[in-house]
Image 1 (cartoon, rainbow, N blue to C red):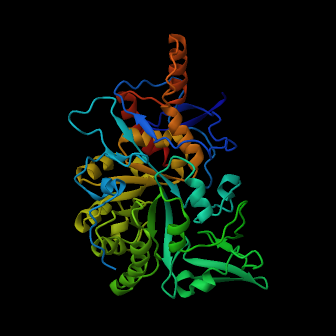
Image 2 (tube, helix red, strand yellow; image 1 turned 120 degrees about the vertical axis):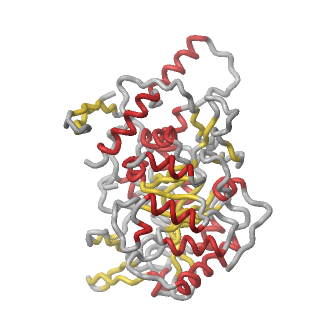
Image 3 (cartoon, one colour; image 1 turned 90 degrees about the vertical axis):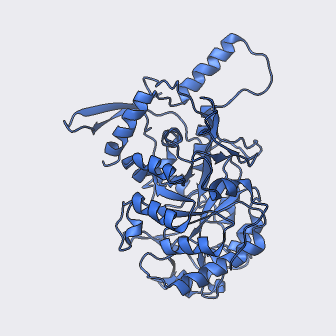
Length: 454
């Protein structure tokens, strides 16, 4: 195993901390998992964590520039885990058993199991067309192909973005504008200003004899790239996703709105009614979580239905908005408590900058999920488990689920094994599992806010 070292300024005295960072081969994407069973991602919590001297928290892997619905009696337990704010703050769900488990019970033992909710970002990961990392350009994001590919791995939900077209059809698309090229000129149109027919005319078509408009994408800094991926797939509607995606997979539906538009309540209501109409007809018992960066939309969808939990999305202050409710975790907590929302989805850096926010969120009886490129590092995900975070949204679905599962892979074949084999397996797990004492964990929590500022 090779390693590199990073220097960070990490104290008021400007002392330097040298961290050795081993680089194991955690990101081999060639292994086929199509026929493998889907174990729940179970991590044992123990007070007897010991750190491996050659293991550091952050591993130097490549991160790409990276209508009103009444409450139903037959709630799916996954929804119930998020819906009921009185549940234990660390209660998470198992994909297979769909039962709520927790480790905050007074009678819980040190080694009680805690299951972390894993969510695939836009399916099997977002597309970053400018990235040299081919994994970020492998499958078309927010597509049925990407969602069903993610379902091959032990995840609980896929996250995707929903907007509504001019003729009131909910479609799956992240960007506010869709781009094509005509005679060398880039033409961009707002999703809400085009019809469903026009929306579906972009990109690959369902009928092989049809040729769609070439699809382009604009980055935040204004650069434009042709939207090319290794495995493409047609654009799709919310209805199609319900009908064609593996039924066991839950949906984290992000209600997408333009940050630069001030929406009136009647506009939001109209859009949300169009989305709820499809959900009411096609969701059946599929687990669903709503989330939105638009605080008024999050509050309104909570009022319009009480079947599915609603989470408020925030970057925790990484960017500043005119609406102060979007500018900090404290404001996010206020939004949730005032509107009866069930939780927060935060950019992971905001949590690491202010680890104390986790306690404040839990004390408010709210669930906490995170998103962000740091969630593509297994140790960061494991660290969040230790910190009590309820779930993570990740791009590298295969790599992260395999790494986290391997941290505590039990031997369940029933074979009698020798003490030597037991010790060999134990040592192998020690080598792959980041383990921390309470003192070391406290140190890391103080260190991380300094690391991520650089």
